[in-house]
Length: 246
Picture 1 (tube, rainbow, N blue to C red):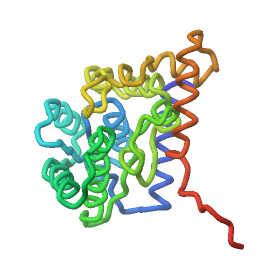
Picture 2: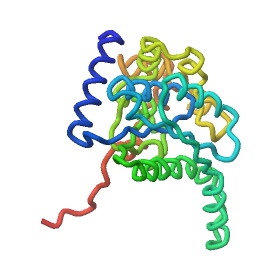
Picture 3: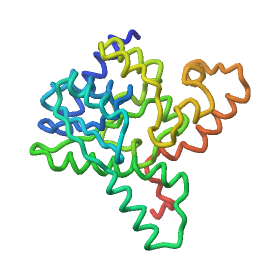
Picture 4: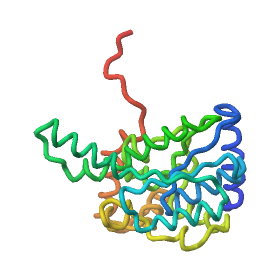
Protein backbone atom coordinates (compact mmCIF):
# COMPACT_ATOMS: atom_id res chain seq x y z
CA UNK A 1 0.00 0.00 0.00
CA UNK A 2 1.35 3.42 -0.95
CA UNK A 3 1.98 6.03 1.79
CA UNK A 4 -0.83 8.18 0.44
CA UNK A 5 -3.28 5.29 0.75
CA UNK A 6 -2.15 4.63 4.31
CA UNK A 7 -2.66 8.29 5.14
CA UNK A 8 -6.24 8.13 3.87
CA UNK A 9 -6.99 5.01 5.92
CA UNK A 10 -5.44 6.46 9.09
CA UNK A 11 -7.33 9.72 8.61
CA UNK A 12 -10.61 7.85 8.28
CA UNK A 13 -9.75 5.70 11.30
CA UNK A 14 -9.08 8.72 13.50
CA UNK A 15 -12.38 10.31 12.49
CA UNK A 16 -14.29 7.12 13.16
CA UNK A 17 -12.66 6.62 16.56
CA UNK A 18 -13.46 10.15 17.70
CA UNK A 19 -17.02 9.90 16.38
CA UNK A 20 -17.52 6.95 18.73
CA UNK A 21 -15.34 8.03 21.65
CA UNK A 22 -15.43 11.81 21.81
CA UNK A 23 -17.30 13.61 19.02
CA UNK A 24 -16.49 17.02 20.48
CA UNK A 25 -13.24 16.15 22.25
CA UNK A 26 -9.83 17.46 21.29
CA UNK A 27 -6.84 15.27 20.51
CA UNK A 28 -3.95 15.76 22.92
CA UNK A 29 -0.47 14.76 21.78
CA UNK A 30 2.92 15.08 23.43
CA UNK A 31 5.31 16.85 21.08
CA UNK A 32 8.93 15.80 21.38
CA UNK A 33 10.24 17.30 18.15
CA UNK A 34 10.90 13.83 16.72
CA UNK A 35 9.38 11.90 13.85
CA UNK A 36 6.62 9.99 15.62
CA UNK A 37 4.97 12.82 17.52
CA UNK A 38 5.35 15.14 14.52
CA UNK A 39 3.68 12.68 12.16
CA UNK A 40 0.94 11.74 14.62
CA UNK A 41 0.15 15.41 15.17
CA UNK A 42 0.03 16.03 11.42
CA UNK A 43 -2.33 13.11 10.90
CA UNK A 44 -4.58 14.35 13.70
CA UNK A 45 -4.73 17.79 12.10
CA UNK A 46 -5.60 16.19 8.77
CA UNK A 47 -8.40 14.15 10.36
CA UNK A 48 -9.86 16.60 12.87
CA UNK A 49 -8.66 20.06 11.88
CA UNK A 50 -6.02 22.14 13.66
CA UNK A 51 -8.55 23.61 16.11
CA UNK A 52 -9.09 20.20 17.71
CA UNK A 53 -5.43 19.24 18.16
CA UNK A 54 -3.47 20.29 21.24
CA UNK A 55 0.29 19.81 21.39
CA UNK A 56 2.02 19.56 24.76
CA UNK A 57 5.75 20.08 25.15
CA UNK A 58 7.14 18.65 28.36
CA UNK A 59 10.81 19.45 28.94
CA UNK A 60 12.50 17.97 31.99
CA UNK A 61 14.19 21.17 33.11
CA UNK A 62 16.17 22.34 30.07
CA UNK A 63 15.51 20.57 26.76
CA UNK A 64 18.01 21.50 24.03
CA UNK A 65 15.69 20.58 21.14
CA UNK A 66 12.57 22.28 22.48
CA UNK A 67 12.66 24.64 19.50
CA UNK A 68 12.06 21.65 17.21
CA UNK A 69 8.82 21.01 19.07
CA UNK A 70 7.81 24.66 18.86
CA UNK A 71 8.55 24.69 15.16
CA UNK A 72 6.35 21.67 14.55
CA UNK A 73 3.43 23.23 16.42
CA UNK A 74 3.84 26.46 14.47
CA UNK A 75 4.11 24.57 11.19
CA UNK A 76 0.83 22.75 11.88
CA UNK A 77 -0.85 25.81 13.39
CA UNK A 78 -2.04 23.98 16.49
CA UNK A 79 -2.57 25.15 20.05
CA UNK A 80 0.35 24.23 22.24
CA UNK A 81 1.43 24.37 25.85
CA UNK A 82 4.78 23.98 27.57
CA UNK A 83 4.60 22.13 30.89
CA UNK A 84 8.01 21.74 32.48
CA UNK A 85 8.10 18.44 34.35
CA UNK A 86 11.46 19.13 35.99
CA UNK A 87 9.91 19.96 39.35
CA UNK A 88 7.74 16.84 39.35
CA UNK A 89 10.69 14.61 38.49
CA UNK A 90 12.86 16.21 41.15
CA UNK A 91 10.03 16.01 43.68
CA UNK A 92 9.48 12.30 43.09
CA UNK A 93 13.19 11.57 43.36
CA UNK A 94 13.34 13.55 46.60
CA UNK A 95 10.28 11.72 47.92
CA UNK A 96 11.89 8.36 47.22
CA UNK A 97 15.10 9.46 48.90
CA UNK A 98 13.28 10.75 51.99
CA UNK A 99 10.68 8.01 52.29
CA UNK A 100 12.66 4.88 51.47
CA UNK A 101 16.11 3.40 51.91
CA UNK A 102 16.24 2.57 48.18
CA UNK A 103 18.85 3.86 45.77
CA UNK A 104 17.41 5.24 42.54
CA UNK A 105 18.24 2.74 39.81
CA UNK A 106 19.26 3.72 36.30
CA UNK A 107 16.09 2.24 34.79
CA UNK A 108 13.88 4.01 37.33
CA UNK A 109 15.58 7.30 36.53
CA UNK A 110 15.15 6.80 32.79
CA UNK A 111 11.49 5.73 32.96
CA UNK A 112 10.29 8.26 35.52
CA UNK A 113 10.01 11.25 33.12
CA UNK A 114 7.94 9.39 30.48
CA UNK A 115 5.45 8.30 33.12
CA UNK A 116 5.18 11.83 34.47
CA UNK A 117 4.73 13.09 30.92
CA UNK A 118 1.81 10.73 30.38
CA UNK A 119 0.21 11.90 33.63
CA UNK A 120 0.68 15.46 32.36
CA UNK A 121 -1.04 14.70 29.05
CA UNK A 122 -4.06 13.30 30.87
CA UNK A 123 -4.15 16.32 33.17
CA UNK A 124 -4.19 18.64 30.16
CA UNK A 125 -6.86 16.52 28.47
CA UNK A 126 -9.14 16.71 31.50
CA UNK A 127 -8.68 20.48 31.78
CA UNK A 128 -9.85 21.20 28.21
CA UNK A 129 -13.39 22.62 27.96
CA UNK A 130 -14.54 19.87 25.59
CA UNK A 131 -12.37 17.19 27.13
CA UNK A 132 -9.44 15.53 25.45
CA UNK A 133 -8.29 12.14 24.23
CA UNK A 134 -4.60 11.31 24.51
CA UNK A 135 -2.79 10.01 21.44
CA UNK A 136 -0.28 7.20 21.69
CA UNK A 137 2.71 7.94 19.43
CA UNK A 138 4.62 4.63 19.50
CA UNK A 139 5.39 2.87 16.24
CA UNK A 140 5.37 -0.87 15.50
CA UNK A 141 9.16 -1.20 15.45
CA UNK A 142 9.49 0.25 18.96
CA UNK A 143 6.57 -1.77 20.27
CA UNK A 144 7.94 -4.99 18.78
CA UNK A 145 11.13 -4.82 20.85
CA UNK A 146 9.61 -3.09 23.87
CA UNK A 147 11.38 0.21 23.28
CA UNK A 148 8.87 2.20 25.28
CA UNK A 149 7.96 2.90 28.88
CA UNK A 150 5.02 0.96 30.29
CA UNK A 151 2.36 3.47 31.38
CA UNK A 152 4.59 6.18 29.92
CA UNK A 153 4.82 6.74 26.17
CA UNK A 154 3.32 3.25 25.70
CA UNK A 155 0.00 4.51 27.11
CA UNK A 156 -2.78 6.57 25.52
CA UNK A 157 -6.44 6.40 24.54
CA UNK A 158 -5.87 5.54 20.88
CA UNK A 159 -2.88 4.65 18.70
CA UNK A 160 -2.17 6.23 15.33
CA UNK A 161 1.01 4.63 13.96
CA UNK A 162 1.46 1.55 16.13
CA UNK A 163 0.96 -0.74 13.12
CA UNK A 164 3.65 1.05 11.08
CA UNK A 165 7.37 0.35 11.19
CA UNK A 166 9.87 3.20 11.47
CA UNK A 167 10.55 2.90 7.73
CA UNK A 168 6.84 3.26 6.97
CA UNK A 169 6.42 6.15 9.42
CA UNK A 170 9.21 8.04 7.66
CA UNK A 171 7.55 7.47 4.30
CA UNK A 172 4.31 8.91 5.63
CA UNK A 173 6.12 11.92 7.10
CA UNK A 174 7.63 12.69 3.72
CA UNK A 175 4.28 12.20 1.97
CA UNK A 176 2.66 14.64 4.43
CA UNK A 177 5.24 17.28 3.52
CA UNK A 178 6.58 17.74 7.04
CA UNK A 179 9.98 19.41 7.50
CA UNK A 180 12.61 16.81 6.58
CA UNK A 181 14.85 17.76 9.49
CA UNK A 182 12.09 16.73 11.92
CA UNK A 183 11.02 13.58 10.09
CA UNK A 184 14.58 12.32 9.62
CA UNK A 185 16.02 13.58 12.88
CA UNK A 186 18.21 10.97 14.57
CA UNK A 187 15.81 9.27 17.00
CA UNK A 188 16.71 9.10 20.67
CA UNK A 189 14.85 8.73 23.93
CA UNK A 190 16.15 12.10 25.11
CA UNK A 191 16.94 10.48 28.43
CA UNK A 192 19.93 8.18 28.17
CA UNK A 193 22.14 10.31 25.93
CA UNK A 194 22.17 7.59 23.25
CA UNK A 195 20.46 7.29 19.89
CA UNK A 196 17.73 4.65 19.65
CA UNK A 197 19.86 2.47 17.41
CA UNK A 198 22.91 2.75 19.67
CA UNK A 199 20.82 1.77 22.66
CA UNK A 200 19.11 -1.12 20.89
CA UNK A 201 22.29 -2.45 19.30
CA UNK A 202 20.90 -2.72 15.76
CA UNK A 203 19.45 -0.44 13.10
CA UNK A 204 15.77 0.21 12.51
CA UNK A 205 16.34 -0.83 8.89
CA UNK A 206 17.45 -4.29 10.04
CA UNK A 207 14.61 -4.51 12.56
CA UNK A 208 11.96 -3.42 10.06
CA UNK A 209 13.18 -5.88 7.46
CA UNK A 210 13.03 -8.70 10.00
CA UNK A 211 9.56 -7.70 11.16
CA UNK A 212 8.14 -7.57 7.64
CA UNK A 213 10.05 -10.39 5.94
CA UNK A 214 11.48 -12.59 8.68
CA UNK A 215 14.93 -12.13 7.16
CA UNK A 216 17.96 -11.11 9.24
CA UNK A 217 21.38 -12.29 8.06
CA UNK A 218 23.11 -11.38 11.33
CA UNK A 219 22.30 -14.23 13.68
CA UNK A 220 23.32 -12.28 16.79
CA UNK A 221 21.00 -9.42 15.85
CA UNK A 222 18.15 -11.82 15.11
CA UNK A 223 18.52 -13.47 18.50
CA UNK A 224 18.61 -10.10 20.23
CA UNK A 225 15.46 -8.93 18.46
CA UNK A 226 13.65 -12.17 19.33
CA UNK A 227 14.73 -11.90 22.96
CA UNK A 228 13.63 -8.27 23.30
CA UNK A 229 10.30 -9.11 21.69
CA UNK A 230 9.64 -12.04 24.01
CA UNK A 231 10.58 -10.35 27.29
CA UNK A 232 8.66 -7.16 26.48
CA UNK A 233 5.37 -8.61 25.27
CA UNK A 234 3.83 -7.74 28.64
CA UNK A 235 3.95 -4.07 27.61
CA UNK A 236 1.47 -4.73 24.79
CA UNK A 237 -1.00 -6.79 26.77
CA UNK A 238 -3.81 -5.69 29.03
CA UNK A 239 -3.36 -6.24 32.77
CA UNK A 240 -3.69 -10.01 33.33
CA UNK A 241 -6.03 -11.44 35.92
CA UNK A 242 -3.92 -14.01 37.72
CA UNK A 243 -6.69 -16.44 38.59
CA UNK A 244 -10.02 -17.43 37.08
CA UNK A 245 -12.52 -17.54 39.97
CA UNK A 246 -15.63 -18.34 37.95
